[in-house]
Every structure is written in C-alpha cells, then in structure tokens.
Image 1: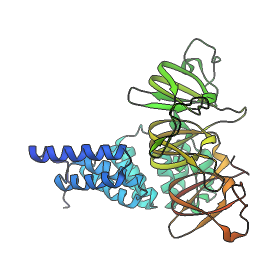
Image 2 (image 1 turned 45 degrees about the horizontal axis):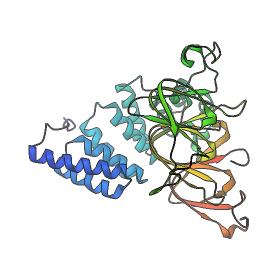
Image 3 (image 1 turned 45 degrees about the vertical axis):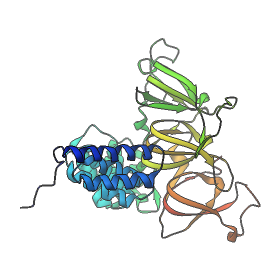
Image 4 (image 1 turned 120 degrees about the vertical axis):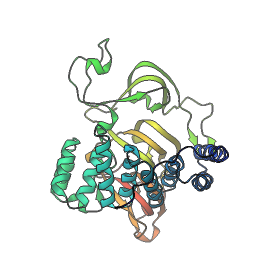
Length: 391
C-alpha cells in the first residue's frame, strides 16, 4: 500500500520558526519590489529550513511564474499540493501551471480535483475544458465549455480548432469572472443600485473590498456604489514615477474603499471582454484597457515597433479590455520557434516574450509604422487582432 502524501508539519521549533519568519518576510518585501531573484533565494532557504511548511512553496511558485518559468513553478506547486492535498486553491494553481507547460494530463487531473474540492468555483471549468480538448476528450470538453457559458468554444472544439496553435481565448479569460451579468430591468437612473435596478449587457462590475482596489478609465466609469473613493492614478515606469504631479492627462482613476465599481463600453454596440489573470505577466495596448481589479501591479511602457503606449500588468486579478472575444486570436509561442507578425496587429501578450524588428523580411516600414514586421521569441501567448489594425 502506498504511503499517504506528507502533510504540513506541526509548528517548527522556536529558533527555526523565527528564522523562517524572517526569510518569508524578506521574500515578501523583495516580491513587492519585484526583486524576484532575491525573493527566490530567500524562499529556497526557507524551504530548506522547514521543508514541510507550505507557505514558502506557495510564494516560491508565484515568484517563478512572475519570471516566466512555468515548469519550475509547477514543481513548487506540486510540493505544495503534496502537503495540502485537500486545498482547492493549491490544486487549481498546480493545474494552471501544468496547463502553461502543456502537460494536459496533469492539468486535467488537478483541475478535476480542484472542482471536487470546491465545486462552486467556476474559474476551473474553462481551463479544464481546454485540457480535455487537448487530450481528445471532445464530448467532455464541449459539455464543460457549455457549462462555463462559452458556447463559441464548444463549437470551436467540435470543429477541432483546439488542436492548432491558436489558443481559445477562454483558456485565458471568461467574461463571467468579472461579476457582470446580463440583466433586464429599470434604467441606471433608478435610485437603486445597478445590481438591483438591472443593467445592460455591456456593463461589468468590479467588487472593491478593504484590501483591494481597481483602476478604471474615466470615460468607461459608469457609477460606483458603497463607500468607494476616486482619485487620480499615478502612472509608473520601472523604477520611477512617470507623472508625479501632472494630472492634466489622467488615463486611469484609482477606486478604493468598499463597494462596487460599474464599468461599461465607450463605443455603442460593443461589449467589453474580461481577461482573467492568474499569476501571469501580461502586456496590453493601453488604449484598449478599460480597467482592472485585484492583486495586480502595473507599469507603463511602449509597444515594440510602433511605440504605442503599453501597460505591463502582473499578478492575479481581472482586466477589462475594449475588444470582443471574436476580435482576437491567441497564438502560443514556444522557445523552439520564432514567430513574426505586423506590429499593428499586436494587441498584447502573456508571458516572457522578446521582440525585435525583422529587417530581413523586406516588408518593414521605415520607422514606427503599423506595418513594421516584428519577430518574437520566448515562451508565452500572443494576442493578435483578427480583423485589421489593433489600434
């Protein structure tokens, strides 16, 4: 008979506990400062001090994911799940890490376990459906996509689209995770809250609690309820504040306190799309971002080639973008290949990708145009405009 998986040990001796606490505290500070190599060294030392304490494994996995090392993160999550086999979040995180490195069998097993342990958590369903589709379990995948409200992905699975390099976008995101739902009823002018009064289909809700906040484009902000404070968001570049005093061209409003923030499309006839971020590193065209909420850090930069404004988001949360799921394709890039595209079609990317202008193609624009050919290498997923220019 096989031995039971190890469980978290009782409290370590006082001296070990003190040293462990110091290591974890320093690692947490390094993590917040994005000094990821230092954070990893502290966490590896913490693991050596207390190999059965689950806290170091959880943070170690997150640090490795932030560095784009999904395989190493999977190993840390596996050790965490060994120690906490009945922890739904640990099994969910392990399943996602396995999915990122295309170990679909392990991903399916862990996501199934997460759903058994926490059946009310709807996040796992579309990821599990995608893993099943890649394993050839077409009927199960279609049924799971349908349960997740992703009928278009169920149809794509039936058509065999999930066997190509094009990644169904619902494996990265799902509208329903935003908390918005299509309701009918009175107009927003009602004195009731939007949730009570009923909202149009193109509105989404960010829930703000004492330990969280949201950032929203002013023109996309519909209303707030509860005790929510609005202030100008300070834009940051790596290592410095980009706009310390100038609020004349504020791009985002910071929403904090406790309550709800309702966000809508800026153009008639469009419906925003909710992108779920699960300890990912994500880069998006700033002009296409309506807002975000959760444990996400952000910086600003520029897109390769065109120099368009770029947002760099990392962590865990939800981002609302000004495109529909049908507007984009998500193409996986692996270290074994080089991918080329026109920079004007690039909406963003997930993971650790490096871009260079491809002067050998003969099609590059002289400078900065939306027709510049760029090449990318690394490991991640490209988000590409399906129809014309991404701007």
